[in-house]
Length: 212
Image (tube, rainbow, N blue to C red; front, side, top):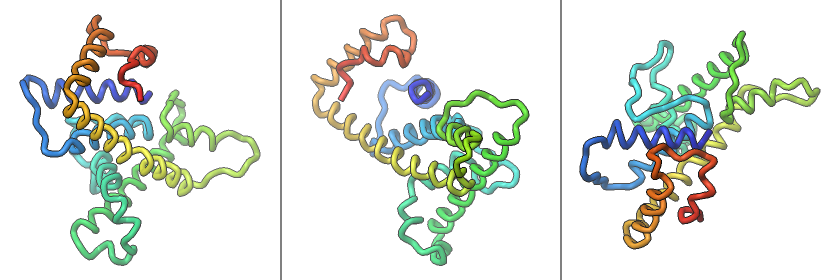
């Protein structure tokens, strides 16, 4: 699922955002890699597709979009950790952080209730659904509460978001410094993509030059 989501996200970046441009410049590489990591987490973690050109309309009962709340939470989670709850109303940024956490929690609670109460169960393979499915198994073991389910997802967010984004940033920086290696990698990928079709997960072992 992560592979397929990443391919779609990158295709959208190339076609919808960068389409038609001869050259792309950015002041900070993380301005590109952070959204990539965020969108992948949205798909693999929550089963919600997020694109570069999502509609920014806010659903009824909310003050932020899911995409906006997820972005603020993953970017400013350190503020939530170090600033006392009573101090989160002192500045505009802190108030926005508090709102984003409340909004994301509300979105997740809605997703839990929606999937638990759905008459027709859809086959989902994201982490959020896997946790819900495991929690629904009648094994006699103690089950996670809604807050515990949400807590597990937050751990996934913290562990996966910035780590992935900054690793990609350093990778791109090194490729920019060592242009000979960049060209070798480019030709390697081109050779494996000769058919013009996006690579599939089954093709991953063939990308030997890009493996760590």
